[in-house]
Length: 370
Ligand code: F6P
Image 1 (cartoon, rainbow, N blue to C red):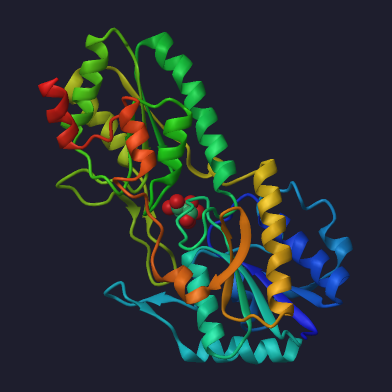
Image 2 (image 1 turned 90 degrees about the horizontal axis):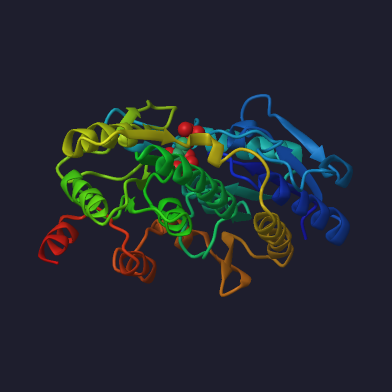
């Protein structure tokens, strides 16, 4: 049995991080008599004069509904750098320094809250003999082996509310309104919110779109007497024949930043339809603030199960939601591939059945025939 667990939060923040920290501290301390040390700013807190603090149940009081992470986070850092060709580089000396610091601090095992990038670093610690349990975090919901990541459902609520609000103003002004949501590699937020918020067009990374097909959908709505249209586009959506849109490509220490597809679409749709079109970029509003009730529950379950897994001797695992149950899966499987939207899956089909366009050219030709 361990004496001390270290906990850290990596990657972009997500609603529910603090709820996991709270559950880990309460479970470890009260149920197993294990100490918890909070590591600040993700794995970076293990380097140099390490930045850590002991967490007792008193320190996590009031954290359940609080957004962000009290431990701070980093999107990228010294554990994975990128070389001039964009390839990731892992420097052994950095891992050696972190592991040496862990020994000094008495940290025997790690609970790591993060998405695929952070969990890939966690798996490097596992390979070097440190017991690790990952907790799946990302509002994008793109981690494999788990049906849901915590933070996603709250982000979905926020995006859906934004669509509801855009509906009434779009209808009042006879406008085309575009909502750009997060979703770097996977369109889960766009797809789910588009269904829940009654979008007319959903554009996701998994289904390349053409502006012509989107314009055609708008024309067909006009012809049917609907004088406004709502489009939800994931930041990672790709127009056929174009590259991904970046705000900047990052460097060795900072991640590339996607963005601009919504505004590009606005210009293209105005040019193609002559209709007044506006774009709203929802951005980090999707990530900040209080987790909803579901995410608090999921985060708490994940946190408690992560401690239980380590206490039972499991290593190199990630807690996951499968068929309503919290299970553990091998970390290597969880990070092997991203979970993207199946283009022919049930949700996409449901969207198409209910008249939503994904802007694919085949849909445009289908509309022309009908
Ligand atoms: O991974 C979650 C995510 O929300 C992505 O959808 C988005 O591209 C990224 O984080 C943005 O991160 P940052 O805070 O660095 O802009």
